Length: 312
Image 1 (spheres, rainbow, N blue to C red):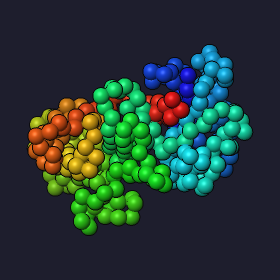
Image 2: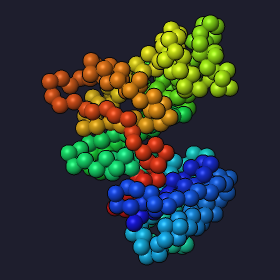
Image 3: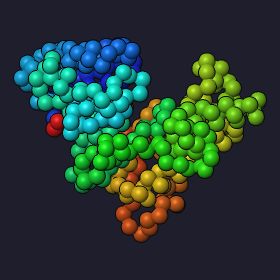
């Protein structure tokens, strides 16, 4: 058995995970992000022990603890170098955690953990190269090469949302302009939806936004499915933005498989099928086996499961 911890800016989640990627017990607590790093790590250890007890296990039954965190991680030295919105700067996370529980501890970026979770759950011996993309507030991703996470020489690789797709395009939170994240994220989708709604006061998008109480990532999709022309134009543009980025990702890595996660992935085939069609037309490789693109399976559990699998 393994314990996985998903450290977020709002909550800390922990779970006991089996060899075959099933969560048998889990719990969470508020992060209290303004606190000192040592206090947060102490709570992580408390939570890890709590879920072990909830699973009916002794501490000795747990082989390792894996921690998925936002920011830049150095697993070799057990350090969390930097985490946005948390007071972690060059924090010796492994050593701090082991003050409370003397057990092997692994640390990795949360998006990388999500990719490892999806890959481990897939458990397909024919797949050596794998990428998981998360379309959320931003665009996250993780890359697996030869069945191992790829994090670069400094642990900061696979910031997959931050290659440029439009020169001098929309501003990105990273400080650049025109990043894929600015066009393929739900944030970008909402921006496009609002702009189209302003141009089209008769669009059904207004009705769906009013029902939900806000403009969301679902607004244009719901309107498009109801036959709204303006909504479909937004959806078509958004899907093209996602697909164009995927073309570049495939051209660079040529993975066996890419999975798409995040809330927008719940659109299923309505999102997936046109993405596949666009990618098949424009990907550079021809007349050879092609990358399979699918919807991710684990949802919000991917990061926790992947963190647990760091020690497998």
